[in-house]
Image 1: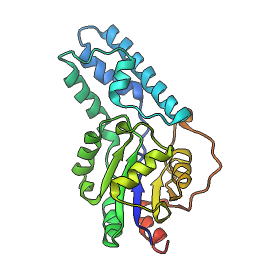
Image 2: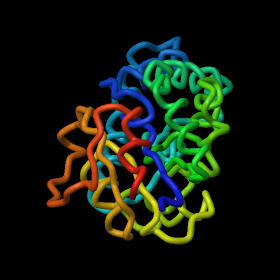
Image 3: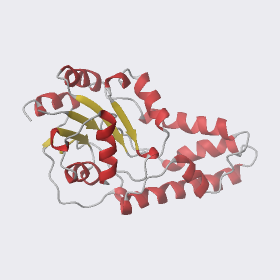
Image 4: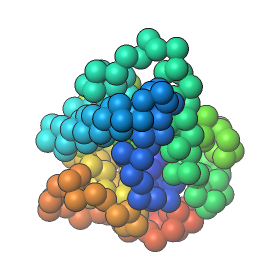
Length: 236
């Protein structure tokens, strides 16, 4: 019997949307340096480079990071009185990529009715409260027994400690009775199976080439829609 199911967030609970890192940072710097458009573009370039560099380090060593580190890498002065407004604009830019799949709520309810513990484990640099606010907005936060964001961790997926933290957050004790659902073969499928979990692939995301890692791994199941998950794992 399945004890717990843990989900990836972006590209799994939310549909994948290809976004431009630089455009997000231009939104931020257009407010932070509104009086100097040239400086705003230069700082946006530095932030985009820092953002990309941190994600490259994730690919190479699963080193987690948070938003403040990207700002520090680009030498941004966060003490500016405009920083708060600029950061809010940056967050608002990304809201378009945060909407929960409409099939998530009924699927989560069906699993919860079986007594299965539910969780989230996401590789993210954003604060956990942002994610939780979006999940609450979409009426699904209450289904989860625990949510784990890599911005609060030392390592992110596929590092085993990230998955162990997610299982601990939902109160699960036996990885063999737990399932991870995600969209990335390396980060999600190999990471989950590496600690003895079963893994389900949702193969819809157009993962950036610079974030892809070739890996020889097979998921325990593949679904095209979240609604298919309860039936897939019913007899696991």
